[in-house]
Length: 435
Image (cartoon, rainbow, N blue to C red; front, side):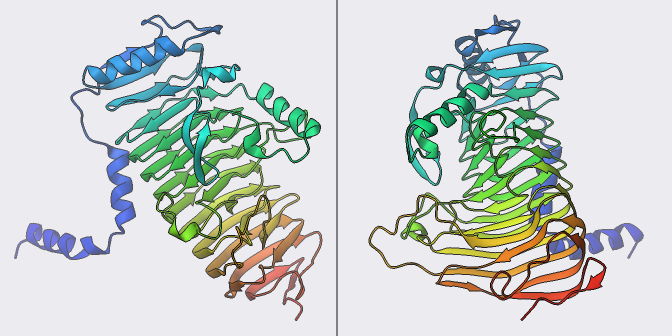
């Protein structure tokens, strides 16, 4: 057998060992040549005004529709600031925002006409995003430019309403997301700066095989109400599978990456909310926000999640929210090579009672198992807490090779149960939790 045959035989024998997710990742990154990929539709050449005042929704939507009708191609946002209301991507259309180009959301909420949409774990009439895509496969949104939600008027309206009306909930005040991608697969979002969203930044719902890389997610994250963006999640992975998030930067006013599904005592029967599965997050920096990864506030099954080589500066690392009204299963979540600094917690597992409703049912059971955190270094405020609801089963959470300077060591039976420690050094000393 010659050398060429040997090589071919080795490749054939080893192919089954290559994880499917890597094959999918490479296929999306490399892409496939397209007869339409050289068709570029520059919105400015088609009549859009870059004066930071003119609302260009009709013009830009016509460009998108024309691009799709003529076989597809790329709609280009060139340098300049182009204001628009809700836009809807059509089949065959990719979007490129050049460096120096800004697609800026209108501050008039009527430029986002109400429609049935997925929000906070269910479908209801609410506002669409600035950019919307439904059933658009092999979609690419790229470039070095910015999508700006002009969020401050929406944030102010929310806080003003909450001050005036007791019990104001998140969805009581209409606010647009920046991007909503639904029922789509083989999607790549690269190089985009998501800034000042009125609500969530990037919402992925029932999507498969999505790459988000080299993006920035930024919103006001300081004092409430003047300099804080409520509900400004960076990425919401909702009922989606095979999602890869890499080399991104987060500094927002709410969760950085939230893994979501549905909620309520009948959640496991919700066919609109399949499990969140096979999520990989790597080489990201988290500067501000509620948590590197948060499971909840709406979630049922979340499993097979990997977070690696990330930096958390003043941001909690892993947050598992346990709803007393929802059956939940969080399993096979692995974190490794995490660097921490600032006032934050490594792990927070606790009940989450916001807007919960048992609908007359008995409290459901929840399960947490196969959670592993290893190779963590730096400093933080506390290690956090692990505490379930009355019907939560928590298998031991493994902490391995953790070396941290901790301002307050608060581990005890009441705050940090079900932890297995291996080579954990706190403030320079080998550590064993109080039992």
